[in-house]
Length: 188
Length: 188
Image 1 (cartoon, chains in turn yellow, brown):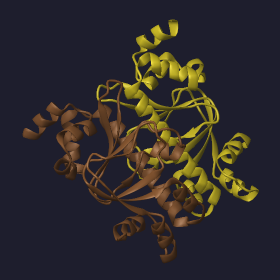
Image 2 (cartoon, rainbow over the protein chains, first blue to last red):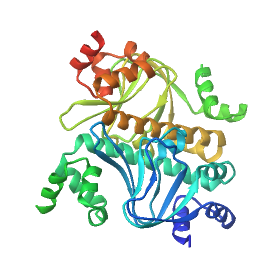
Image 3 (cartoon, one colour):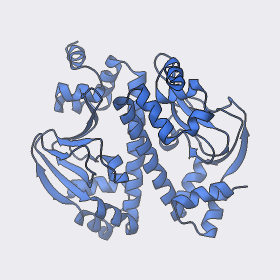
Image 4 (tube, chains in turn yellow, red):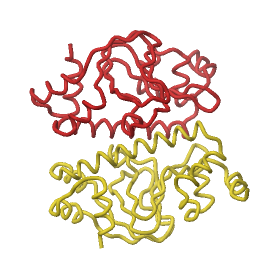
């Protein structure tokens, strides 16, 4: 049931059998339907997700009401609306299922309880934070240094599965380009 | 010499005397001159800074050559070009002294050596990463949800010292608005 999550955890830190079991016990399965919203803007984020299959999206809306996609979680990805999960303040982001998805989730209280006693889980969390920060920083850099074509070429190079799995509307909002521009780039 | 740094460390985690001494021993003093560049774009970031007095700035340039200021470190702030410090890849950011500044710095190798043995230092680092991620996320949100006036009002509310300490050119690049717009907002 939780083999894929075990593999991901072991990529980030060295868990012994007991430590791993303690972590896995805190994760619960959930099946979510396409278009289901797991977190609304304005609510405090209380869950951290692992995607077994399907796709979750973290997004927010700008001052014109346009959706901006921050992060896409496909098979075996982890994540959540991390700022609100950390700060316990209302989220400005939504979490949505883009497909019917099987997920595992851990509640905030269990997540932080584990941090007090489970040393590899602390390492796992530190590594997650490092990656989340670097990912965010790289995204900002690319938004201001690359034009639409270069951003599209970058995603082909670094994350081609997004082009197959995600609609043009969502991919355009992820790359922060217009949907018509994306269609033109795809056809060229 | 290092009292201010001790206070900041103790805000983030509970160090005993020995653990604190071990950390402080790894920090070295440096005096830097106004406009001195501590890290150039394209170099790997090997240092993490604490500002005793003065001001450091982390910035990068967009595809039109305009400077974008990501982070300003005034008295008793900590930070660096964090993505490169973590990834060991060349930095897209510069670190620059905006004033004559007295700083303390720790080298990357010492920083990571401490992480292996010094438990409060691990907690300190996790807390830094949480704050850096949340700060970055909030900045992205504000850039897409607030207009120039609202960003200016936000900085008056949350970080008024920046308005006194930093030139209009730098503050405008921090808020990602034009310098003329900032001058107009200030005069109103």
